Image 1 (spheres, rainbow, N blue to C red):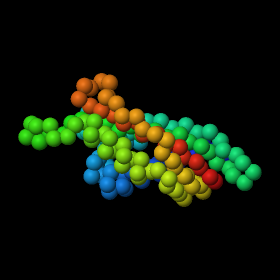
Image 2: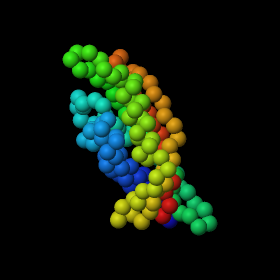
Image 3: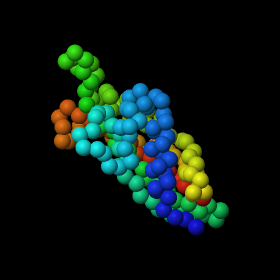
Image 4: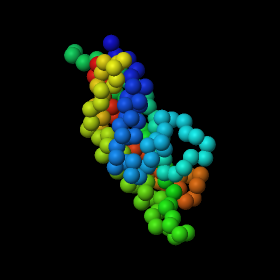
Length: 148
């Protein structure tokens, strides 16, 4: 029976991002959030920002299609009061690594839920973070197809 498996997908994808060593070189795993962030977080950071679910039913398939969005935030990097990397460059590197870590991957959704999710990168948007003039954000979208 098809069901909303977005919780399981979110949990699996966040775990995959936190375990990705190339991404950890850009964003500490403790700065990858499932939706709520702490007050005054350190930059850069990644946040799960969107998820929904729609049933997927075929003659031999029971599952769901789940659009997923992660948003990465970055500020410029300074050394000795000199900017050595722009926020835009940092956020584009993070975006590229998120898509590399999750695109065309297969995730087992846990022992309490017998299903797998197949992910595909759907695109990214890079822009200034509206509230802060020196910060940038990347919105990275995926589609997860869950088969149970």
